[in-house]
Image: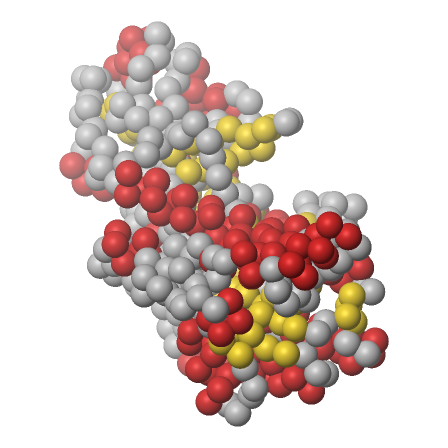
Length: 519
């Protein structure tokens, strides 16, 4: 056990600080502090000693140098059970520090502000703080390091119960948290400065830190542990910034589907709805109103939509809430809804479904720069697949041209295909899907699946494929079902055969020169 007699307190995040320090003082702990923390403690009437009085050396360079001093780090690093260390302590008049309460300058919050300059960001790179945290954590056998306000109550409770001491296990746990704190902080600085320096999209070293948002009941299967983490190098964004307004706890699979549902609807400017199962859409549509878009999306394949995730790119109004509730009454349970917001009456109406999880995402869309997938012993990384360069150019190599009135539907189907598991086939009419096939190893099988889902709705429809047709058999299947136009990237050795088949069957085909595999 380690008895706490003296603590150095210097924090940017002052959440819960006064009560914590008051508790330490009541336990007989002497408090050293710096700058704004000293002022906050003194104004609260708490006894506090300036670090500059302790070291005999003033703060300088506008606070850049205040705790970088041998009397600070000697007091933190001295091994109490090492005679030579303790002799140095006595020789140099060092007063031992038994606890460090430090959290770091608000670097992430600073760089998140619009218009922040590099010079402003640099001044929020903490030096003395991480040095003290690391010194205390290294010497955790004798010094406690507390860097999370969430720990204050637990630390005080243990000290009260033990007469001012902290156990070896507690100090080790606090040290682990401390090194995570400094690692995450350095990762945020690295990420920001890399952007300022114009680092390549795929750097030589990837440095990331992830902060746990919540534990999950289990992973993809009940025997797998799971948790939800956010990127700790920057402020919350995308799904990590979403708020759950209603419903039971989210699952691992819910998070994956919610992310995909949010991504697809964000790809469209018009009111758009999509329904997802197993990270692939089973229906998507755009319409003049969100309620109509939802009904059209559900009509694509209501059987597959059962137990799915609903993504919406507009605030949910009462008409849309009624459409969702009517769909659930007719076709059954839905898991989640994610949207930018909810009208008060719509939110109350949807809350009537106890198990329907409702999420509000203030910023829709994918908020990341890179996509990661784990492989054994490592990971592969890639840029995010976006439509940032606008609508694809439709180059038509066939004798028959795509009718002008079908061009918007062709582009709609192509956008939806980006979100379908490969091999991806989307059949659409009037900016709504009528048949989707994907996640199979044969493209012609994906066409068969989409055609079967579409039924008679395939007649006069447009089919989009995420990649080229290696053989003309898939085109033949689509034409027999009544599809009149195809959209695909092109670029296959079999393109000529595909063109010949389209010309023979009287089907139009456009190339986009861009593939959208989604494994």
